[in-house]
Image (tube, rainbow, N blue to C red):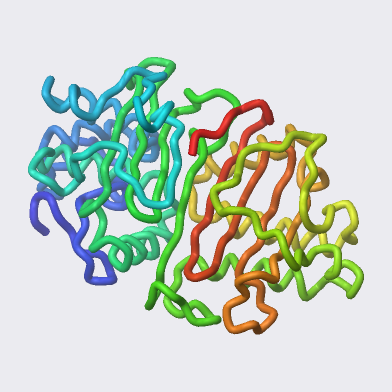
Length: 350
């Protein structure tokens, strides 16, 4: 293995990250680093198994490694307002650069790139990393090629956030600094599998399993329930994921109209949605949902518009509550907008 690279089982080259660190988490960090041939500065970032599993500790490590010029370029005050994009820390989009320096560029040293990769990997469940890397390869030439990062606040204090963006990706690492919100704020994921305009079964799309899970639920509804759940006209714009609050008017069928067995299927859909992300983010999202009444406060809508192949397998659907929005747009390919909080007064910056 080279000092700064490894090859995963897909044959795609990536920077040394959380999987490698976890393998050696029970050993002393420097001994583990020496055994792997890691740079000593990266090895010191992993003093224990706890640190190895916490991307937040890696954000502090990365911050300490940055030069003054690098900090000037990618580090911002907590509530920095971009003249054109508003509150930059909370912005979300389907394809954007939060800063103009890509991860794989010469702007970052190999050691810094290794720590950034470790942070990135730590935000996902290990079994999802190959799929996320596939999405990045298909959509933007691979991890780090078009992805950029920013750091808000000061890591190591009680207010900081790391944000990574790119095509079909906005993810965050905040150490619970951002109050009331799950995932550190609104996130985005998507994929164009084999083609920009996908076929009805979305071949090669790593996120279509979520769509299939939702459609299994639709098929489990009786005729009257399907009529309530299916919206024939009125598909909202995909980025319309601001909160409506408890008094909001929601499309689709109220979850309270479902039987116990059907509600269990909704729970399975929810589990599928949060599945890619690390456990702490999953737990925070569920806690936010519960604070606003849980799934019983939500509606589920399927949209007849833009049904690829007109096969009745609904490509577009939305699970929404007072301060919970998971909008799944499957046509022409998958875009998913996520906005989850425990308080509907939180304002979206899209």
